[in-house]
Image (tube, rainbow, N blue to C red; front, side, top):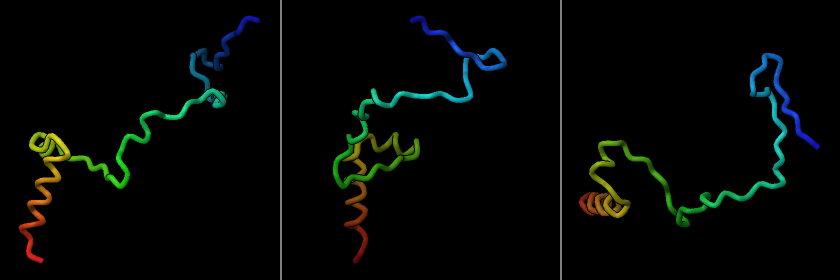
Length: 70
């Protein structure tokens, strides 16, 4: 059986609605790459130039916390 293409009234290739078959969907393999109890924070570009790794950010924050009197 040959499949025919269906076009909308304007002749564009995009339809206003599509019927997707989710029965063949696979789980996102990238979804759970963060460690448990971790928090993702986005740094501003100027800070990202200084702090290249999460270890560098953690070290700076721990130093700052130790300097604050309790």
